[in-house]
Image (cartoon, rainbow over all chains, first blue to last red):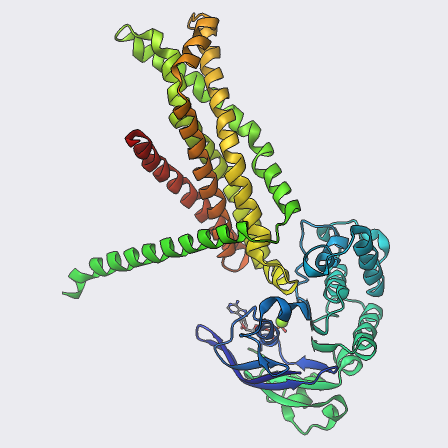
Length: 248
Length: 261
Ligand SMILES: Nc1ncnc2c1ncn2[C@@H]1O[C@H](COP(=O)(O)OP(=O)(O)OP(=O)(O)O)[C@@H](O)[C@H]1O
Ligand SMILES: [Mg+2]
């Protein structure tokens, strides 16, 4: 279980997170929605300790993440970055199998390669991309390689930062199904950021809306349509007029 | 009054800033050393770094050294002629190359070639979140990116300096025997007899220090890079400036130390 309480983070005078409270239960899928630039990526990164929050506490299974042993803590996580963040000096399969080629999860090279190719298949990529360099792939393909890398070592907790942006509708639904499958079948805990409302409905058990540095609304995905919250209503219907300003 | 104090304020701030920077770099270097001696050791990254820093620097090192050795011979011949001492060309070329110019020129070339590329590569990785991705994949960036490069430079730059010394001396030899009318066998004999083991050891020791400076500055500036393309540009520029200045300063200090031994 991941628990954030009163988490704050500022970059200079830019107060991004202003007291975030959020709970993600083990084995559930939480989707974070919210306008561009509201701090969704910063929120994920602060759980992982990539961004150090200014105040408040983040706990994983009751233990403060800033005090946990970094190696065992990170070994439980997988993360898909918004920009893919593939290692451009390594071929695709070595990106995917990165964790399987070194450290505590190290295994023989051809076994790691086989797993990588299998994970690539799951994100809809053919085996022949395995030996290409990330720079030779399209944006959507890079995103999917990033996804394959995040799930390659089958971590308990997986963060997906906009897994379907830049993908065609068919590929998006393949990815949505994959994320759902990982939660249902492998019992993983997922936290996903997305702007795509059909993804929200396909992936989420629970939804949280980040706005103005705080969680404006959170609840089960089924309650989203009659939340009674004007921010959520405007966001899911995509109207330009409403409490959320169009310029921010 | 405040107008009079303003320059002092600037001086004070800059001094404090410089002290803080020295502290951060020192800390970074110590961390790097601690990562070099503790496992895991990434041998593939180390191999690539050896190749990049060592093997691929050979052409530029060789060319720099051969031209410098040649020019040195011409200068010493002309200078020596003013008091009938043309014959000292082999000795002065040898000592000038080995004790001073070999290490310094190789060091500066490494700063230009290796420091810049390390800084740009690591800074780009930082900007595109690849460093963050490394962390999430349970890999320590200092261990994976910094330690192999610095270790490779510490080991291979002395070697490059040794090769540069030899090629530089050969440049002097080629000019002296080709155009200045020196006897080939006598030139070699004079060079070999004149050089002491200590000259060569001090040359290699300088190479080791300069290699450490060049690679550490590249890594440090890369890891500290700001955001965006501008951040990468600044990191690259800063790393080369810092490495070049520190190499020349270290050379001065080391030369002083070696003379006092
Ligand atoms: N390292 C950083 N340094 C300074 N400011 C930052 C940094 N990272 C994020 N920010 C700022 O924090 C705010 C939130 O950024 P974040 O990337 O979390 O937005 P987001 O909600 O993920 O938006 P999007 O949906 O567009 O990805 C932005 O104003 C951004 O400029
Ligand atoms: Mg984002």
